Image (tube, rainbow, N blue to C red; front, side, top):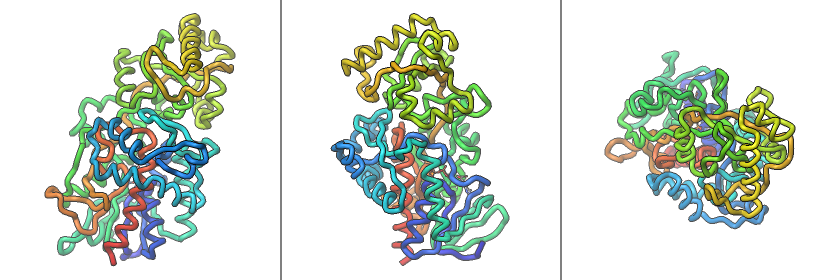
Length: 445
Ligand code: ADP
């Protein structure tokens, strides 16, 4: 670890790795500092994909999309509380980010759909592997190739300011490292009990899908030097998390996107499974705290590679036919059969009379073996964080730029309004990670 770099990047998730590569490619010398012994943060846990509109991948699939539709659907999904400037930049730069990834050998050439979206714009690898692990592995290869220094088990405890500008950081080993700019890529606070207690006391009892290092450090570091925080009470609870073991496993939205349904403990549907996360969570909560079950067949299973993993760790119940499955899980067999028959009829007619679902209706639940996963909501993503402008510059309480401080990824607040759409978090790490790398370069000129 040297005493001086051009830019210090705090955090090694999607935002940190992308910004480091972008800064390096512009000729800067970046360093990435990661406090955990694992690289990749919550990004490694992301499962659905990366949203973007007007991409070459969509055209390859004969899907004609628009920036405006991407903007509008995200805005409605976010309760129209999204910061319009950030959302505009985000929706208009996703396609460039997909191009950039492709140029770097990172191919997301399959498409799926997530809750709240009307178009297939969730890009994922054609292996259908969960996006997060794939993205981090591939970005790390580039970091290694470029010999960008990356240190784990180094936690940043303080930001240094000199003459009103960022001048470096102090680590937990009390080492001062100097740099002309700092990028906060520290992620959110889904595992940060103190911040949750302060802003969302009501959620303290829930489990979280987050890695233990998601404690909101970047938010605290920035606040300590006067940064403005926005939307701190907007916390996303993910509706479908398997939590019957000691670990909370997020069951990705792709399972529903590819055709799974949700049923209550009687084996009856109760919601449009692809409504927004906020609404699906509320519908599950209204069942009275027993959670719900995802039901799907072998055809759907084949479309979502992650299910192999869920099965491998023992989260999936199976039955050769629906009766056997019902028996294992404890549904009345006839009720489950009726629910699935009704659903298959809705798929055939492309008309869900009961809950008006319109997406993820491309295949029936028909091919055995059949499967069930017990799920319940858990704390998943924190929409709030530091305020930035579209140049990723962190703002102070008076909306003025804090010189030399940039932020990208989940540490930032405002983009998602009161509900993040699935597939938008990976997208934001790449879109704003690239932007941060570019804007730091411009700032240091
Ligand atoms: P994003 O999706 O925004 O890139 P991630 O959660 O994937 O966010 O990654 C953020 C990373 O930042 C995590 O690996 C986390 O451990 C790391 N991190 C958080 N706080 C600090 C800190 N104070 N010093 C160094 N690394 C940190």
